[in-house]
Image (cartoon, rainbow, N blue to C red; front, side, top):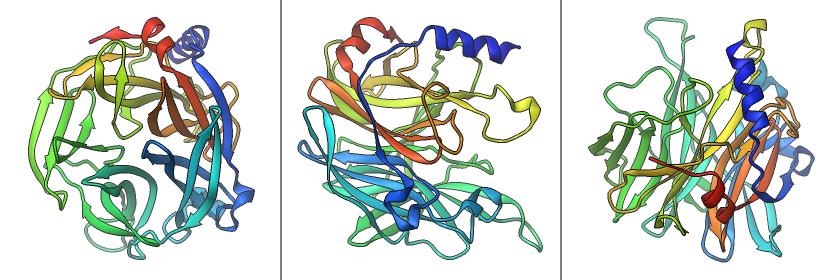
Length: 332
């Protein structure tokens, strides 16, 4: 099978650039996260990272009761000492700030105008008539406000599908922007309420082992590189379904890549042609092929990446940026 061949090729070309790889969150650490504390994201201020993660209190989430059995966003404070993560506190729950008929999850953090904002996914039922049974997903914006997330806007573009998620946000020249897609490269500019003001579009095609959809993973952050100087960096991913024909919905192996783009023109510059992180080898958890990166920042000459592991745990990886640039980079 074509997918089996792609998996074997990707495993054979495994690019090891992680200097430190360590589990940071486990479900037993939080009473409200007994069935998973995962998909962490972060903002880094040069000394410490504010980390947000998704905590699940019930296994029923994966059995159709995802609206009533909601996830809890929780905050932790992380520093790095001798390349190892150290926490001042862990798993401080905050209110999601959404109404009862809506499930929110997978919060990502970014800084805008000196404040900490979050982009996240909501799920809800919406269709004509009754009963309401068609599941929809949208990307939403919020702002951290004390012990809660203050809702800002449900994001929309004219051609929204039933499932719109993994839009990634960043600040550029004082403006709020988000990347909607990689192929083509589409960046939208918003006002402070998340209302769209304009779009930048550029044709882009990225070679890869499997003809899979490329999805955003992390919010873009500024980094200093030898190759491009100061530029933006994001992680993106695709997954392969080795057991899809046998049934099941989470038989996916995730592959994480890096893309660098210009800090002025916002045009793509380069990407890693081999994955920098992947599931299916040493990952554990509920779905042991899943390694989902949700947060990243530069730490010295390295890249710190936070990921969900198996839809259950959270993981910290410190990636060797020099090795990535010299041995795993293709210009675009």
